[in-house]
Image 1 (cartoon, protein in one colour):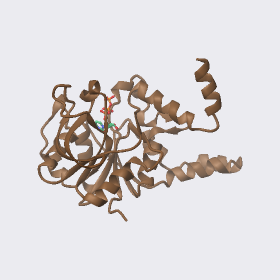
Image 2: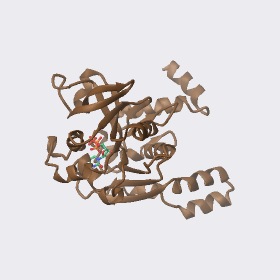
Image 3: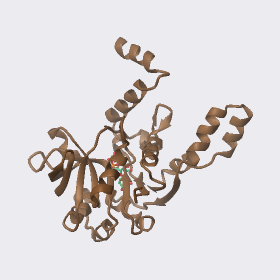
Image 4: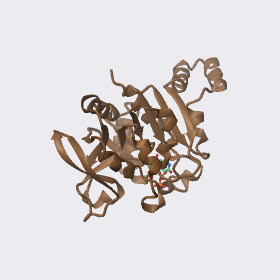
Length: 287
Ligand code: UTP
């Protein structure tokens, strides 16, 4: 049994790449078929053995809290109309895990968002799942793949995949030495490097297992690029003090914070849904 039971999901960002929709709808609440993106991410955490989840949220994201809360009046209506299947679905959502919330009062970057989880994490290793990175794996949930690496090797574990060289400037990029197939010991990492600066094309993609020692580095953290407090700056400090691994996980990753990523997720999930996939295939062919 893994020691890792806690996950932090930061959802406090402004989502500027998806404006104007994100002016009033958090991107994490944008639906992929009939469920908001965040539902799939919480499900991934639970399927990976997580029991306690902390959302780092902000004042414009109250509907995320509502989504995971009870909705007694709706349950009554579904009960009266004998829609028991949906009633169970609605009830299951509010009892998915022990979910709590903390506010990030100013959006000072991912590192600052994670720092808000210090009390929740205590002295345990913990996971981070970015609220706008959807990862679909047909085999083992992505987070579970990282937890399994942690259980075998210890340290911290970053989920990575190869990206096109032209895209390295969008991500934190690692430099590492291979430990075994798909596993690297991280020696360096650079946030949003140019193609020339990039030490590889292995990008950190929204899933982490992190040692609680990160908090002392976050605390000392100076303002990084773009005036934001970057998580990668503190992970880099962790690298000089303890083992940090990068695991090339199996699964399709969708950045639902941009239009194309969101659309790809919607199409791929719809193609897996038996109730609509035939008609959708026909429609796509016709187009
Ligand atoms: P992103 O940079 O992808 O999200 O952060 P963003 O800032 O909301 O979006 P854009 O770039 O303006 O379109 C990755 C994750 O970190 C959270 C975001 O909500 C997202 O889930 N985040 C980011 C915070 O919680 N707080 C922050 O200050 C910044």
